Length: 267
Image (cartoon, rainbow, N blue to C red; front, side, top):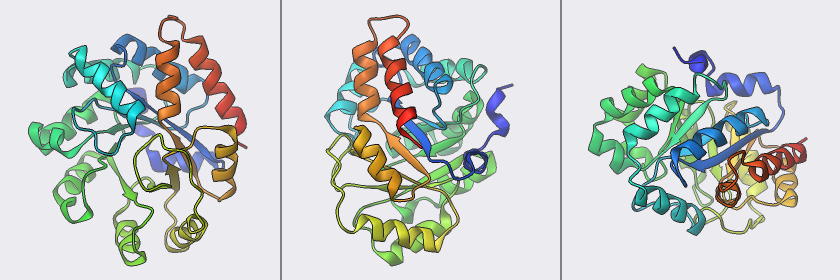
């Protein structure tokens, strides 16, 4: 049985006691699954509080060039979903850090919702994030996730209306993910004037932890976003890029050092 089955995403935030969580993202199978497995172990050892693992997909609409390229490399290597699940099932025996599966709705539909959720549950995933799934269509997936104790992480866009934010917060599980920028992942952080007001509004309307992502890559970005009073920071493209650059070294030392430096930037 996987070690992490009793550690939910919600409980992870409780254990952090208001410290800001580090939530890195990497793409499964880039450049291969053995590197992914080693990277997951490094992230867990070096202080990642929750890890998002991207399932390679041929048309990743929310992803910027860095993560698209990672997805493309993994698909060219003929990485299969079941191979990813097998690797995750192994690594979740060794790490306690909760894993969130990041994937697009087509993949879930193609496999069948109940089948997909059963598979990720058995592999040891604790959460699921589906960036192209609108609130109006989450009901079946939401119900299956609840039955399987998979926390379905919902997104709030930078232009989402206050009424819609309230509806999202009513359904949120584990944590809620605020997108800091209009656009795709990997863009430069644009701390627009309304982001703090948006965070304050979310905080005033829910007790659920709030994580923020898209465009966070430098120590300055991390410190700025942390100053907004969020519960966690998601970093994707920066980690994906560093992992690819480090992947010729079997010990992934550059990647390890990068993770340490990011963790040290968080208060």
